[in-house]
Image (cartoon, rainbow, N blue to C red; front, side, top):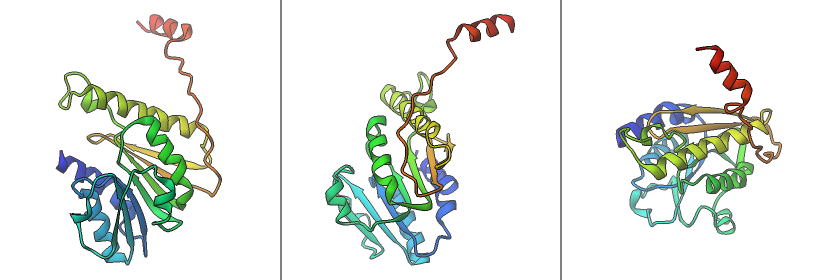
Length: 207
């Protein structure tokens, strides 16, 4: 799983970040420090700084002076803002994987993203966790699918403000690119025509 995760990070995330000069990165979720250490490598190379937030004590992941660890919930907004700069080139959200919570974190920290900056949201692919598949896990299947659908609901009301791309490698990842300094509009429910009479008729006629 770690190899799959590392490949996803390298191909989908760090390929966009590797050449940013004097970057500032914000990361929610550290655990073993796989992404943290890659952020630090880029910061060492390009004279940057990485700020990582986790509810657990992950301070032993690195002693590099390019890294600042903040032990906190990701929604302890007042405390976190006292310990981070105002703007970032990239923000990674990989903490509590619940669609409602992830949405709150996206909307709050979006204003801290530079124009042209990246916001990455991990765990948006439910396919590996579906029944009888290789990760077969009910909660992860539902949470990841709901997160994917939530991001699409953000897209529909912000089509001029953001560009969004998805990776479906492993647990998946969303890449949100900030196009302008407009406030992120509230998401809108997407009304599907999958179960419409018109679609049922289409299916009947295509048999």
